[in-house]
Length: 118
Image (tube, rainbow, N blue to C red; front, top):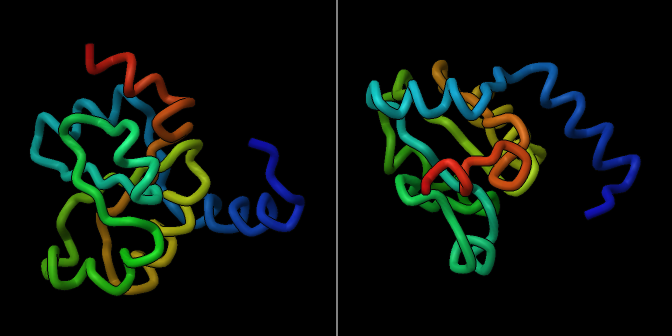
């Protein structure tokens, strides 16, 4: 998908403020108890998602996260399709006080996560 200059600027600013991790780092952190969250739209989740992920869409994550994860030190790894929306969501969660949140570089498509699940 081609993104607008404005969207890329916005996500670039967010990405500068969040910690991004690779697929290999994600897999290692998941083994150690991290939670993987898919922030894509419902239709994207329904079409394909990582087996170990839970779905909290980008449109509601800021509203619902505190009820699901009240401990703001919980390790959360967010992903989307290409790593842009997850960076925006991670940036907002950090602004809400979450201290252990990451965005997966490249998202579901760019990271190879879907392929790595076997």
